[in-house]
Image (tube, rainbow, N blue to C red; front, side):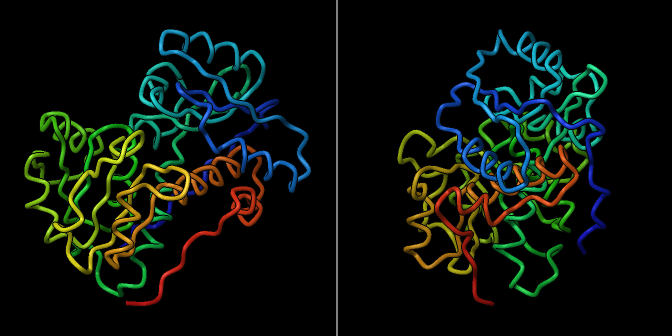
Length: 292
């Protein structure tokens, strides 16, 4: 059974400006749809990109706090930001990663909306199955900050039969312990043998971001498997394109990106995010699925 949704987190002060920080960050689509959302909502704020090296992160956060700013944090800074921002929400502390932040009384507050983004995508892919999700076998590939957010989303949606596949088994076990979610752990070398029984396979690694590599062979997946790749690229990631050609329900990370951004927008401003305008700014619409 899906657990009750926690009360939404809302900033007590609206940001004076918005920024996404990461490295690299030039490819980020967040400014595209967030600027559209700001226009539709009649909010005269800017949303900028800042390419910040890891050794510049602390200074950048201090500067943004002095400006009364807020925004988003992307690769490779999400986990480091959770250590640098003293005031983090319980969800950000549990995940161990910050992707959304704002300033209150001169100090930054860190939050995690990747959980909401992952949950929205998993619901879209799997809500038509009409089964008790606690019995659904899930394979989660990866053990980093994005995997942590996805693992929490799975658990909060009611999934209990989860296997984490990672190159470093100790890191996967540490992730399971940190978020207090029981999961099996398997090595990356065994992934093709494991996914055949899975009803949902999720890639939470950067595989496929800069090349055409697949995190797992499409031929190894069940014909009724749903597939979620947190990576997004113009068009589709090659893995997701191949999964769709094989007739699988499959999404890249675009819905997660928009939904985490919508959750961040609602956190900053306490008004509904204009999701239609956000999708329109990306010149696409979220995919829909017929009941199984």
